[in-house]
Image (tube, rainbow, N blue to C red):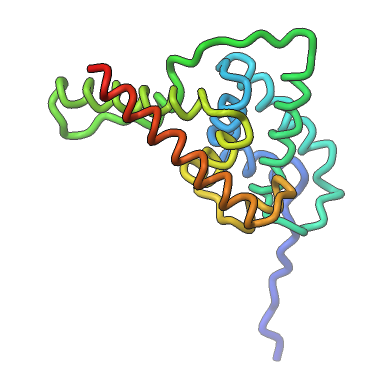
Length: 181
């Protein structure tokens, strides 16, 4: 008596890419923005990341999660962009705006929260890259230390040190801005 096993074939390259885009496109765009500080460039980089993903997906060894692999591609694309002669820096004004959703707060409270979030976001983006990167990956993207280690090739102690120093720098920036009010 046969129970009739159903063979499940792995998803095609196109299906897998579509799933990865649905899962990670927004977070990749936000991550790219933290490097390049320009939404248009971040969108272009996001597209480049998925083109590279499509080209290399068959060679994915599974040493890390797809998310970590895509973040690594994003990081490299951003670094290439920042090294390019076309790079121009822009002051960030709308970082993480998509994360600030409408909730049950009054309009006044929503505006105050948005301003506080934007102020914090701008202070994060003003940090030196080595601290900003770790803070974004840990707090905004919620990666674990081991995932950050795999992505950045830094040891966990270095990551913890940068996280601690970055938080101290942010704290000082926040205290200074509160003192100016």
